[in-house]
Length: 155
Image 1 (cartoon, rainbow, N blue to C red):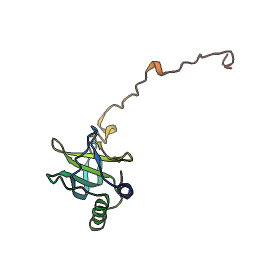
Image 2: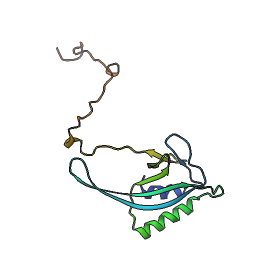
Image 3: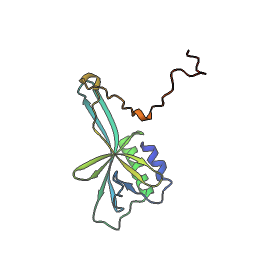
Image 4: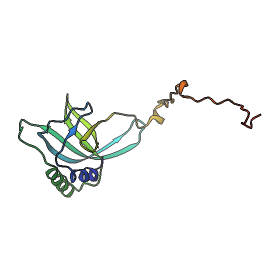
């Protein structure tokens, strides 16, 4: 989800809810403790120089059970961040405390913001000798047509 998309959704909501990949909701008294622009400059295992930039939201739970972040307040925080940090319309990455700091992608299902699982990957498979995965086909899913049928024009 891009920054412009969350801003559009926030304008339509009365309350904010973030849902973890396992279906549980982040406690409703969460805080957005940071919004930032993170740039990662790196070299992949194939030697290609790469650059990734994301907008980072950090969610945090405190013992402030009376706190509820309203959509208009989060929208104001986002707009201030855009102005002060010169943030463009980038993809959003969300940090949330699990066993350690966990990073998620962000999506929206019409009701909740969904924290989506992120996975590591090799960006230079062609240079590393990683074989391309062959597509697995279930033989039962194949529709067999006779090679020659009376109306088939093949004989």
